[in-house]
Amino acid sequence: QVQLVESGGGLVQPGGSLKLSCAFSGSIFTIYTMGWYRQAPGKQRELVARITSGGYTNYADSVKGRFTISRDNAKNTVSLQMNSLKPEDTAVYYCNAVRGTGHDYWGQGTQVTVSS
Image (cartoon, rainbow, N blue to C red; front, side, top):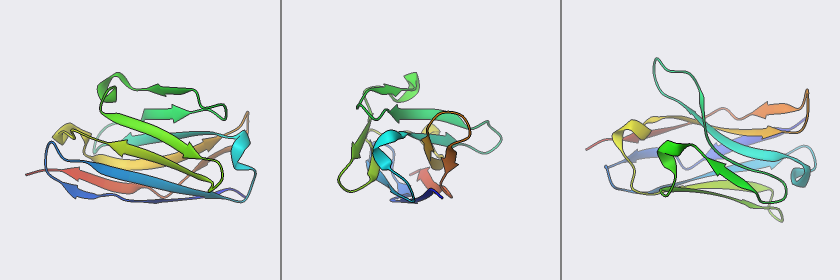
């Protein structure tokens, strides 16, 4: 069974940076597309960034140019570097691993709060 464990959330001032990490275990990491999603209070969960097994990436328009997703296939980890953070980036961030139908896994989430 796939397990995902996020780390790296916290409180940061506007304009600051944070790096989230997600440790993957329980299956073959390299065949999964990995993603970061977020959910703010009262809003639906939304895609932030995604990276395929081949390294192709895509980002939500709201984070393009500020966030970078990367994966380390040797360490079974996926990271999200977040720069120039804004108050509207405040949310619980979730790591996701997906492979076809029926293989869709989520981490427990990590809180990111951007506030002065």
